[in-house]
Amino acid sequence: MEKEIEIKQSGVKNFLEENNFEGIILSRQSNFLWFSGGRRNDVIKNEDVSLVYLFITKDKRYLIATNSDADRVMKEELEGYGFELVKFSWFNQNVFDAIKKIGIKGKIAADFYEPGLYFAEGDLAYIRKNMTSFEVERYKKFCSDYAKTITNYCLGLRKKLTEIELAAGLNYECYKRGIRMPVLMIGSDERIFSFKHPCSTNKKIDKYVLIATVGEREGICANVTRCVYFGKIPAELMERHHAVNYVINKFYANAIPGKTTKELFEIGKEAYKEVGYDGEWESHIQGGISGYKPLEFEVNAVTDIKISNNNIMAFNPTIKGTKSEDPILTKNNSSEITVFDKRWPFEEIEVDGKKFKRPLIMEL
Image 1 (tube, rainbow, N blue to C red):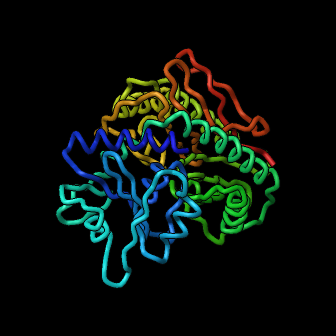
Image 2 (image 1 turned 45 degrees about the horizontal axis):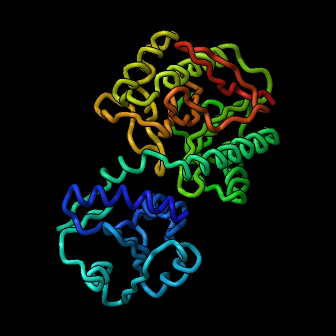
Image 3 (image 1 turned 90 degrees about the vertical axis):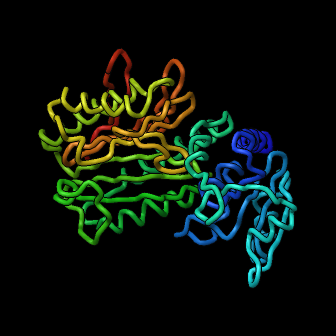
């Protein structure tokens, strides 16, 4: 783990030197997880900025917190990884007092807004997007576990569950395996034909359900959607699903190092036209570069970020009533779909000379 942290510190050091900063404060959960190699600082689950901070200089790294959290986080999360502990009093001090105690007097940056500080979240996102070999190894293991967990759970589904009950059950199965779910949307029957983001309700599931998720373990996200039908799948719905699988494979085939998110946006628009659903892309985002957030950079008409080796691309094209969504890990020669379970029904589609396996709608 320390080797991975050293790589992260090297990237931060370059940023600090290029911008003449003495250090940077990391408090967002995504950045704490990224820099520490998957260690957690989130005491409050629904706030991004934590009670626990990292302060990174060109050659040192500090854990900064009050007595409430300092000893626990050091002992259970960061001990042995080269962090120095600095405490401050919760009742009359803050993180900036702790930084003064360290002896820092020059310019600093932070991943949150504060008058007088440089807001560096955009810079950090660009550094985060390129996965180290350590992260790639962890991510592949997580994605394999996630694929099996989703398949196991869906094979046991029965009609008349409510959307909320389905969500609660899947969340429980994932949490047992150390997988958190920052996104979990369940849309069934007519709701999924009406809404692109179907937050779960008490509606009972009759014939069809779409399960849209983002799983996260050790900070890194996997954006995954699966569809289940109780009974015979209508031909029109299956035709739409074949079409949306073609669109995502068009994205996959062209998501190679050197391409940009803006270029992929235009390629995706053309793919919708090829399958007879021109303009359908306008009703839902098409995905982008993922990582320590479900989306670090979107594929759209204005974002122009170059794809690199070991980026996680999370595409999610939709055609009314269905969606195709799985992350792919970019490689120089051939990209790799990371969430796959052969027990789930799938089809293999060739696009631009490349073949990718895509989940179909599961019949139960």
